[in-house]
Image 1: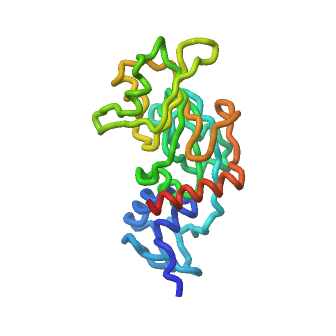
Image 2 (image 1 turned 90 degrees about the horizontal axis):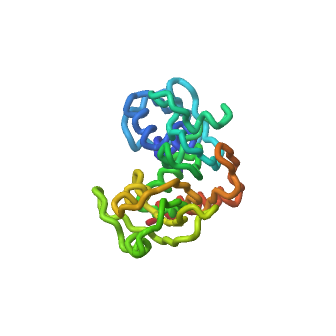
Image 3 (image 1 turned 60 degrees about the vertical axis):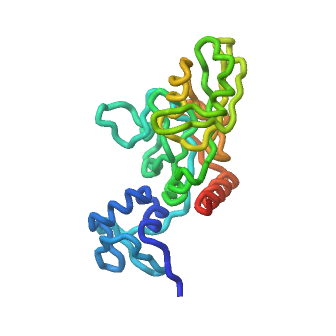
Length: 245
């Protein structure tokens, strides 16, 4: 007999919210299974069970992933109390129920993934998954001659040592300054900006080029696209690998 899956995982996989947010819904008594209110974590949902959130039935949804080129000036939240534009303003209403996988700060642009698969998103963002991210950083002026060595050896920040998995310098487009391409896997808050600040390097712009196996490609700022079936399979595989680490 199937043991089923944990309720919070079921809800996240159905696109209700992230797994952590689903745990809060359960704790608040807003979830029912087969007519009974469930307020403790760890309850399992078996095939045929009827699950409801706030009285509305929840059915498992097919995983959906999109890639968005977040422009600068947009925040990664559904609503902003300061009235700033959000990434959801760039999406049609049918996609506004998706939740973003990680964040980019308001002054950064580039690839942002959104999905209804909360469990996979949770695994990809967990530090143990070591999901690679690639960024393009346009620098102001000449970089220090030892910049690459220091990035690869690690930069001490207030929350620990930040180490680049890879880094290289190239001429920037238009000949203005220098282009730094850097690979990281932790996804700490404003990690690259803090690393550059610690090294005394000024940034002109910061763009995320890739998250895991998904690349920004030719998307223009504000544009989005559905991930291909191949990309969705690769993302699912990365999430499974992260769970096993």
